[in-house]
Amino acid sequence: MHLHKYEKIWLIFGVGSLVLFLLVLGVSAFAFGHQPPSHMGKVDSQNLAQDPVFSNPGVTQINETTYQATIIAQAFGYEPSVVEVPEGSTVIFQVTSKDVVHSFTIPETNVNFMVTPGHVNMATHTFNEPGEYLVLCNEYCGTMHHMMQMRIEVTPK
Ligand code: CUA
Image (tube, rainbow, N blue to C red):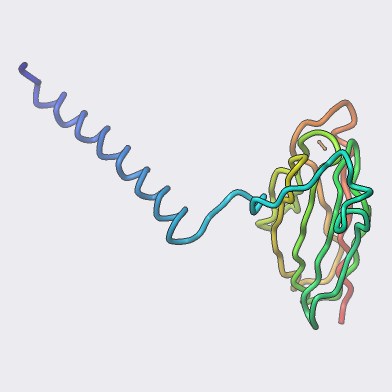
């Protein structure tokens, strides 16, 4: 079979970029440890009231500067609706959904993940600037989706 020179170049380019993309994916997944926000943690979303962690949503202090925020997302809000931590805190968010897929998005930060029922979805963020941070739902979850939000209040030291 005869291939035109340009055809060959184009094929090499196409196959080459596919290999490159797969390499980038493999390196970021295995070398940098990228993984889905669920961290594979499971929870029974139908029975959150009986769950040892999610039956008591809120903020727990882990050490001097680290807090754990346990949050339940449901149409159309978050529980609790306000979380308060001091400036400079690192907050480990663990979020699950009581009903459908929501998201947990803090604009202008790297915190932006899906909240899936049945999973413990996690992210960590350090709040170096005091102020009020808005948390939004980025996944269409129903008629009042655009109203779904909560606040993180970072108090000055
Ligand atoms: Cu929850 Cu959109």
